[in-house]
Length: 199
Image (cartoon, rainbow, N blue to C red; front, side, top):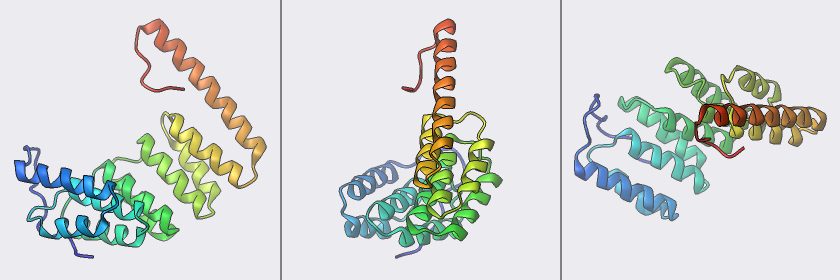
């Protein structure tokens, strides 16, 4: 798999139209399972930003090539492209699919350093990673450190507990989730906010 070429320009300016177009086309190819065509397009892209790299990382994992996804993540970092929360999520999913606890811990450390550790989706991916790799205690520790776990975080840990035959603990956690859901619904009702998730 080709390594990422020139890093994206640092800054927050809008990407050129051709970069946006290529990223959209790359994502469509990956989602349709056309992995070879996707990688060919990626290789030809003169400007590989974090969006393009993340599409390749996610696409490789979805198409059964998590090790290639991890190689892409490493190449992205080496090229100087800074990861965002989506890229870290994609890398963690690849680690989980590959069963690579060592690399998963490295991505976890990176997520902490760049300030993504409290992100709900990052937390859910970490729970999935650690439980797939047989480290339930680490998954529970991640969950406890999540500032405000959402339904994805709860579901990830409940599923993990069930896979490890910790059914009583899973039931207790489900009860906690129901209590949090009721409390949030009450707060939304009395504040006039529209709920942002379906509990």
